[in-house]
Length: 205
Image (cartoon, rainbow, N blue to C red):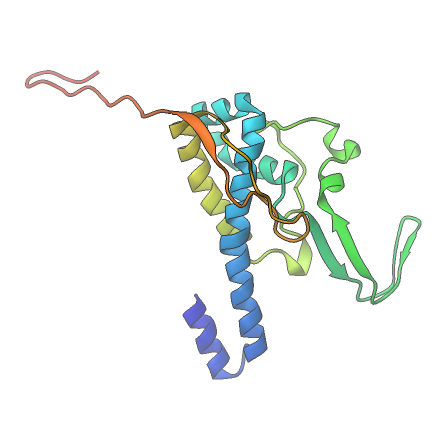
């Protein structure tokens, strides 16, 4: 993908050098940095709700809801920053063109008018969480982040039973991409029971 972006930049009709640098940085942050910290945040959230972790192990088909619920409760990006490109009036709030606006995700994701004060529950159909933003500047790495977490969470839930913290957890700053820098845990290992081997002339059941 980066090779194609470079080719587009060299062709001179799609991307400038500055746009190419910004795009590559965005891919690195969204596809790697943010995703690894979002996965760490998901684990810290599930360790506070062991019944939900056990449910995901039993029903891996709930992974899509688990991803969205994890990002709602513990988003790796805690604030969305925008600059108003025109005058806006939202309810009684006037926002002038050029105003720097910070949208705080924690209060938005826990708005009682939307989420009814309900806690972490991977069985619920929720309103769309805002971690990836909306509109023109919707996160470039959203599909990749969801795909990576969709692969990781069911495998971890199946193999790591009853995970618990196993030491202090250093954290990144709360502004920008946040999450645990390292996450020591202890758990009960689990391996699927192998299918019985059929003897000659018999069928495995």
